[in-house]
Length: 467
Image (cartoon, rainbow, N blue to C red; front, side):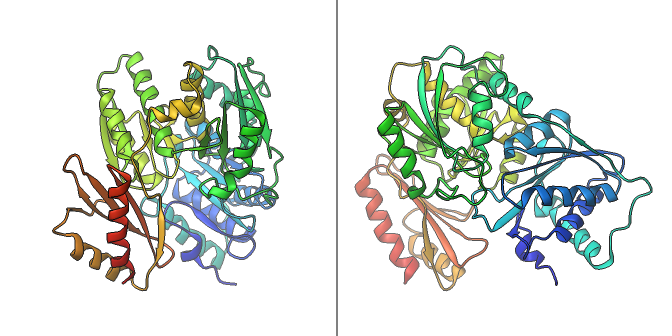
């Protein structure tokens, strides 16, 4: 059976249907190719995996392929994606994490990094790994003169202690926190980081667990908190239990969403602003005076305003974790955020961590006297559309129509997709259109100074797209 590499290998990772696109033979070839691309003969790499049924055998197959090419493998076993980043960063080793994140159970995938959690994209090595793996599948893997070894590392306690060192929660007021792990990896890490499961000192946090049982079939709801219906159980439980807040994680726990004490979702832009504020403060506490924060260009304008009000520099970034990590490294940015609830930390090897973002919100809430809803209100985003996915016959033609219709009505910016904006106060607005990499879709986001103005923009743009 031939492998559909174009479908399997994405811009930033590898993802496909289990035993259809992604088989043990394919994974073994990818392990060998990864070892070759990163010149790992007689060197080491780490492999982690999530709770999906196929993940342990895929992790083993990848190790066999890497071993065949002389690489030494450190198996981490069950871990969250950011836990793998921690090991890659702290040990200075490349990594492979087996997960399909928020995708349904029939999918699996691989997130690959170079040493110190540096990401690999199609342009920076993933295409070469794909081509090497294809050659190995066709002609077989030639074994190195000395096969690699396999060892094991239970990193949960070290990972938990490191996160605690970044965000000190020891002096917060007592909080009751509902955590919806969606049967994903937060069920493995939350009690260790925020509780005593890893042997750390107890924090003044009572965890009310929801769906902590590790189950890659996701029996309760999809592990995708971007979809509102997947937050309903969390929202109801927070209200019923009278909790101070709720946290929702995706399958591999690298994204976090917050719900306030009323069960209302907190915007990812609001969380980004709160985290930015604390990370700027932490950098200043270490004696830094020139502090930069990366702000996703689809985040609320309020995030950049918060960064500037803190006396730091707000630098715009495109969507995509490889791009963000590279830009953060170049600018030594202390923090970076995307509208999709990925939060990146310089002192976490420029990688993203859902639990670190959650800990910042807990710290901001626990060191003050206000409720979660009152805290969120201090960083409330401007009226926004959220992401609207629009089916179109021809993406390019639709973008050209919008560009022609609005070229005299606002500033045109093609930094990432098509952005049209009016920066005139007080009636400012902007909207962005980005094409999907896999479907004939345009993703529409808009924001404005007022709800009425936002609705006017939406009403003006959508008919042009769909005409």
